[in-house]
Image 1 (cartoon, each protein chain N blue to C red):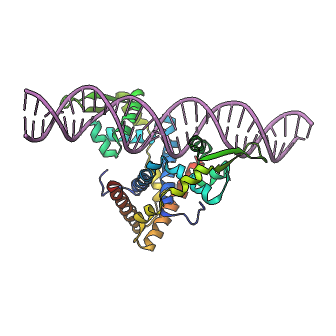
Image 2: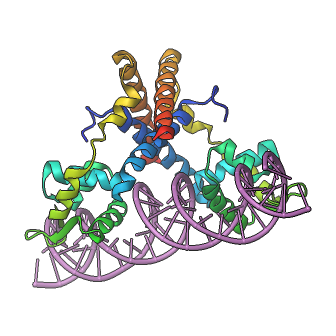
Length: 145
Length: 145
DNA sequence: TGACATTCGTTCGCTACCTTGCGATATTTG
DNA sequence: CAAATATCGCAAGGTAGCGAACGAATGTCA
């Protein structure tokens, strides 16, 4: 795969992993993975959340989220209690040590800025439009087959 | 993450996973993962390859490729022999059953077509340009830090 | 030649994504 | 109400990615 004649698809993969790598590297000193960060971010900004809703918000399968939550519980950053209403649901809350960690985490917005700052708004809009259309088409095809 | 105000970064992730999901679903009946398919594709089109070169061609870490090759060897699709010249290197070859499987695999180009057909060339070019620039910037930042 | 460095592949441990299948709980419906 | 159905979270097993550390083979150079 030479740099020049890569397809759009190949570039989406490269770009995704490049951003992921930078995020992982930044979070490594704190022993956090990127998706774990998203969970903390959501709990810090939206407050206690039912696991099901969190899965929908972050677009993760139940099984995937289950493992991630288990890791955060093991580290003592998140508490998982059974909701009173529906006994199937689990309510997720930041522990005090989770809140403490969240406060000392660096701001990750520099990653998005480093990637896209200075690029023309119209080009960004085009990119989003193309990626969105492609994604929708692919998802439609997946659902059918 | 509501559909409308997603960032470019979020769309690259979505798009990447949507394509991957379709690829995985198509390959599932053949018990192949997407990266395993890329390995077979490379060996089928470029002939026997040294593992190191394959890793560079597919942009995979040695550790990652090692596991994938192990899976393919376990399935009897690929043969791993020590090269005569450099005793550190392993030469990868399709077995006859690997070749047979490759011949019966469906053409996957429909995925890229489904995603991007009919989109204006200029828009695709813009998308590639944006993603490439972003990727390069992120990789530069990763190397420094 | 001998000491040091590099390269190649593996293994280990981790994150993170999936599907399948299960049990427990809710909900809907006959 | 009872039975069928749906939902929620978990566990198991698979793929795919990473970094770190290691042995063996190879290169380098004083």
